[in-house]
Length: 398
Image (cartoon, rainbow, N blue to C red; front, side, top):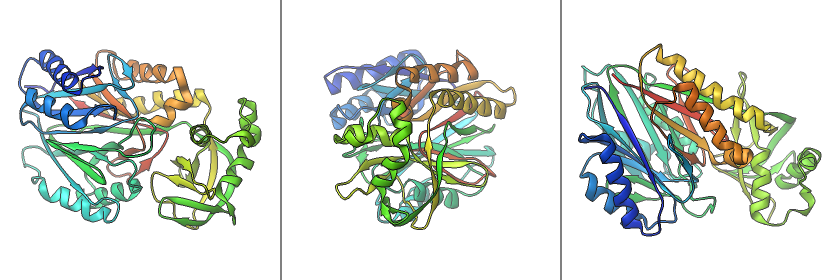
């Protein structure tokens, strides 16, 4: 049997009812027993009641998922909803899931404990890939990805994202089977008879370079070139923001400051481009919080994010992914797209998803979520934790 994925998206007030409805709708579309479930949900729901209802409908099949900043399927893009994908049983695929806690204090140990729970790769399934989801506010995005790349090994490509919480930036959750946890990560190992495709692309360009993180502790950037981080950010982006109708000196509300920071992010020069780091919020001492560790002494640029470049980057990510398929039929598209891009693009965010859909094939089932960070590790090309970036994983039908 070839692989098939179906998706469902449901909104509502009653968490149990929404869980039941989304699971039943997906089951009806699949029409055969599922082998794996991928769940993305708003934090507005009672997560225990939601997951309980879904599990009662689906049974004890492998499941991972997380809370989000927005939910995406090939049918629609929504907020405050629940999106579910079911994958059929297939002679060409096996799915295995595991999770663990303690990501903040011991990211390598956390990932190692997860991998220790997973089976060895079967000989008759020559390709192995993975989905990695983690607490988006643990501040260990880069460490989680680097640890996974080391422990899983150089032959494995994987994609994933940081859990969100509808831009509240208070707490995010990861799911695995019946468990709901914080400060955690979950992995789905995908063993297959043909390789998955994984791609990444961002749409940023430098606004100004020559900055050094002169004081940084973990994921908090305190000083840039010896000055408070927020003051340097304001001064650098003032004229560009003014052209967008934003007076940086009048920004007092945390949400408006956060929206500005998302438009002007940190770019680390990798020698072959820039790796993007999104400042998530400002503290009272004018330091800035990021979704992953910022190394003291790091040299960087402050970037800008033109709308058209964001749309072009979505198309480029899709083109890269479909090229890797080499003509093979695509059974499923998994999209990890930053919540920051949704803010930058506004109403055009839906256009970006439509561009992806047209590029990979309008009939290809698609599920995704708006992340607090994107994960893309491509075999032979190192590992990466990203912000304000599009990551796409394509699974072949066989």
